[in-house]
Structures are given as C-alpha cells and as structure tokens.
Amino acid sequence: MTDKALHKPLVFSGVQPTGNLHLGNYLGAIKNWVPMQDEMPCLFCVVDMHAITVWVDPAELREKTREIAAAYIACGIDAERAIIFPQSRVSAHAELAWILNCVARVGWLNRMTQFKEKAGKNRENASVGLYAYPVLMAADILAYRATHVPVGEDQKQHLELARDIAQKFNNDYGVEDFFPQPEPLILGPTPRVMSLRDGTAKMSKSDPSEFSRINLSDSNDDILQKIRKAKTDPEPLPDTPEGLEARPEAANLIGIFAALSGRSRESIVGQYAGAQFSGFKSELADLTIATIGPIRDRMQRLLKDKAALDQILERGADRAREITRPVMARIREIVGFLG
Ligand code: TYM
Image 1: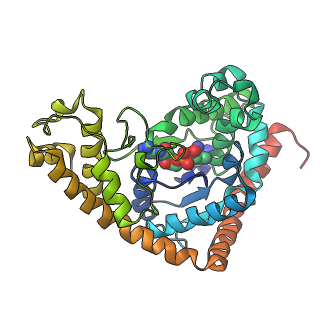
Image 2 (image 1 turned 180 degrees about the vertical axis):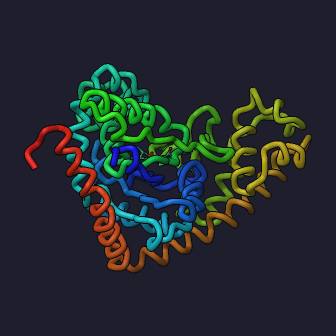
Image 3 (image 1 turned 60 degrees about the vertical axis):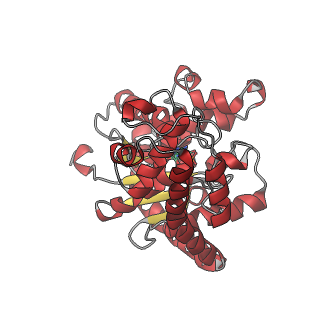
C-alpha cells in the first residue's frame, strides 16, 4: 500500500496553557472544533511544551493545563469521542520536532511574524525554543499525519510553514506522499477577534489590560463592565457592512455579535442600523453572558475534580500515543535510524 493510501481525515488542534482563555480562543478556535467531532477523528491537545518557550511557573503550568482541558470539555468537546491530552505526555512531539528542525530552514523561521512580535527588541535573549516553536507545531500536526487544522487567523503563517516542512521532508527523502498537506480551517465570522481597547490589535492572553479581553472565567458582572467600557467611536452604528470599514472597534463588536448569535454580520448591521452603541452593547453583553456563563460554570465544576481531569488527560495521551506509534516507526525508517 502506498503512503497516500494510508492518509485518513483527522483533525488536530491545540491551545497553550498560558494566561487566561478568552473569547478570541473560543470564537476563533474551540467553538469551531465542536461540530468536527461528528465528522472525523479529532485530537485536541493542551500544548504545554509550547508554553515553556517563555518562562512559566511550574505549579501554574500544571493548573493551567487542567484548566484548558476543562475548558475544552465545558465548550462541548466530548473526551470519549475526541482525544484530549497534554502534548508533553506523548514523546513523539519532541522526537519529530527534532527531525523537522533538521528539515526546516533558518530563512523560513526568520520570516515568522509571531516570533518577531513575541521576542520584541530583545531578540538575542529569546529562548531557542521560542524561535523553533513553529517547528514543534508542525511536529504536533504531522506526528498524526493530521489533515485538518482548525485555528484562528493568527496561526495561518505557522500552518503554511507546516505545509512547507511536510513537502520538503517528502521531497528530501523521496517519499512523495508520506506527509499529507495539512489544511488550515480558519472558520466563522471572527477568525480574528480584536482587543476591546483597540480594534487594530488582536485580543490576546498577554495583553496587560484585563479590559482588552473577555476571559472564559469572567463573572457576568466582569463581562458586562468590559463590554460597557469597550472602545467605540462617536458615530452611531452604520447601516451597511461597508460602513464598518474604517471603524475597527465597531467592526469588532459587530463580528463578536455575529459569531455569538450564529448570524451574519449583514443581518446584525441591518438590525442595528443607525442605533447608538449603548443599546447595542447591552444586548451584546446579554448574549455574551448567555454563552460564556454556562461554559464558565461547567469549567468551575470540572476543576473541582482534578483527579478526574488528570485521568481524562492520561487516557487521552495513551490513545494519542497509539496513533503516533506506527507513524514514528515509519519516520525512523525513512530517516535511516536503526529500528
Ligand atoms: P494559542 O494558544 O495562542 O491560541 C489558541 C487558538 O486560539 C486562536 N486565537 C484566536 N482566534 C481569534 N481571535 C483571536 N484574538 C485569537 N487569539 C487566539 C488561535 O489562532 C488558536 O487557534 N501555536 C498555537 C497552538 C498550537 C497549535 C498546534 C494549533 C500548537 N500546536 C498545532 C494547531 C495545531 C497557539 O499558540 O495558539
């Protein structure tokens, strides 16, 4: 049988256990994972090895890893159907990352915009891990020969790199179809949720302002206050989607409304044409609370039983390892490592 004949549809995605999970992670990624469980096998990883590319307190890392697993389940991921696991518990990720480090080119990594943003001015002092981070991400995906990768828009460049690495591996080793070309799935009306304080900056776990993001752990009152204080402009809401073009804050709030309600931007713009922000914001707050509130409550309940979460993660790692075993055996053979 050829390698291509062995390609099977499979979803892989992940979230880093750092900072607080926010509305961007939910609307840009996790929400879109839920329906995929009915369509193909899914692996949803808590990428703790990615988290240590910058300093993180070990006790906090353990807690955050459980928190992300609880969030996945609270958002509707079923730990029986999908595989939920911590990256560090499946050694194939690290092993394949090393092999792929030897395939990826320095010039390719030098183009990664996220490294430039995260390393900032002090590039010389960034960890080697932060620089090589996109290669580990490629390994995450390729260790399972995953075909579909649902992510927010900010991960697009990393996905393109994973495709280039897969292609170069196949070419260099003359195994034309060994790795599939993983398909980025950038879905929904808000593949890029923006900060509530600045409509031109991404909503991010690392933004120092709590008012820039809605966390999945926020109380109803926090959500209300953050939406009330969200930056807007002095004009009323526009009556056509084109009217949002030079108005990043209004466009962001309309996008969030559309994603939460499952409606199109056009229909939201139509409904609030010419309205003031205050009434719109209060309905947006109600909608956000109606979505995030139950997720937060489920998360809190799940986090009370750490042993149960650890068991889910351990069992997930066992299942994930099973999938990587034959893939890694074949990779070692292709590369020329003794079997
Ligand atoms: P991370 O932890 O930064 O984010 C997790 C997911 O949330 C999406 N996201 C957003 N979507 C819309 N608007 C936003 N403001 C926003 N902020 C974050 C991200 O695009 C992502 O889908 N490197 C990845 C994790 C990773 C991964 C992988 C993903 C590691 N290995 C393999 C897919 C496949 C990351 O740091 O995501």
